[in-house]
Every structure is written in C-alpha cells, then in structure tokens.
Image (cartoon, rainbow, N blue to C red; front, side, top):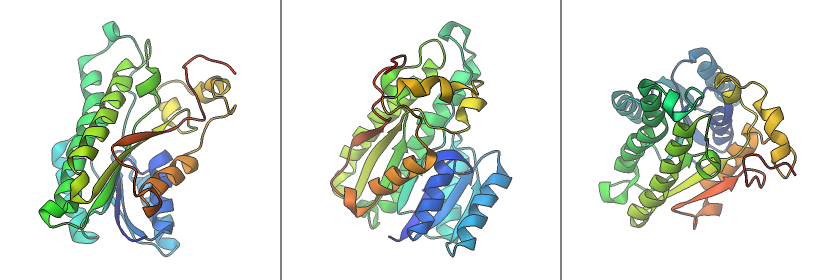
Length: 255
C-alpha cells in the first residue's frame, strides 16, 4: 500500500495502533493529537525509527479551524490525503440527561460527530475525482454504544456515535461514484485508556463477561480491521459499518 493516511486522535489507543500499522504497510502518516504531544511524538518516533514517514500535528478535531489547518499541513508536508481514519472521540462526563451540562453535551457532539463531518469534507475535496483527486477511503470509528445505547451513563456519546453511523452510510452513497469508499468500524469493549478517562477504570474487567468471547478486544485488533477496510481486499465494502465487538449483543448480558 502507499499514500497518505491521516489518523485523528492518534496519540494513544486505537488511533496510535492504526498509525503504526498503517506506516508498516507503506502509508505516510499524519498523527493528529490534541492534548498529548509527548505521546504523539513517541508514535511518530516509533514509525520513523522503523523506516516509515510520519508527522505529528496538533489540533482539536471538534474545531473547524484546526481541522482545516491540519489538512493544509498534510498537503505541504506529506501530500494530499488518500485515506482518513476519523478516530478522535470522547465519552463526556458520566450521568443522566437531566444532570448533563450543556457544554459537555456540545463538546461530545462537536468532537464525535461534527468533527468527522468537517474532516471528511476536507478529505473529499482532495480525494474525489470530481475535484481532480485519485479516490480514497474514509473510515469512521464508531462504537457499540450506537447499537447498545448509553442510558444512565453517556447517552450523548451513544447518540453521537449513532449519528456517525448514519453519516457513514449517507456519505458512502454520496461519493460512491467519485472513487471514494466510506465505511464504519464499530468497536465493542476495547482495552484502552478511555474507560479510566471517563471515570470507570475497572470497566473493562466488569464488561468482559458480557462479551461472548469472554474478553475485551485490543487496539491492535481494531487497527488490523481498520487497515483491512482501507485495503483493496475490502474494495466492495462501502456505506456500511462493520461490528468488531466479539459478538456482544446487549449491554448487561453475561454468557
């Protein structure tokens, strides 16, 4: 493979794994980060040490001006994006709807839903044959919360991810004749730091029994799935979201 791969929220977890694996498959990588410059630079250093090419670019992917600047930087330093993985996201504060702060709700929707809209717009401008591009792939990282919900904890997160899956389908249909595929990746319970950051450090251990396979997934497993989705092996997959949840079908089932 070759081309330019932009991964948002790539300083840790699934995003970092996607960046590292993508570099190993020949992509030039933009590692986007917001508040973790040290981690992002460590990802870039690992890629470059292995013979790849990567840059770190700071930017809040819930802020349109930052997104525009990121794509301009990629144009100048790596070339036009050919593949985009919209991975940046946040759960927001835990709680019920009637306890939810307006600022928290707005931040979640800006990062999880509006951000991928704007990132995808910038990518389409560069990828679409309508605009003189060579085509490309967009992967939107959603969540099993879009299917299972987040009642009592993070319904704003679940709703934003549900919206992202609808966006994935519609954009995939909109640009299907322009050389662009748009697909979603729906992780289930994945062993990353997001659980501790949302205030539930034991969440993975508590939820593992609800997965028929009896364990949480890993960032590396999600990255392998994402890289398969952007590969020619998945060339006929478009406008749909792939579940990667170990078969988990409900939020409280124990198998």
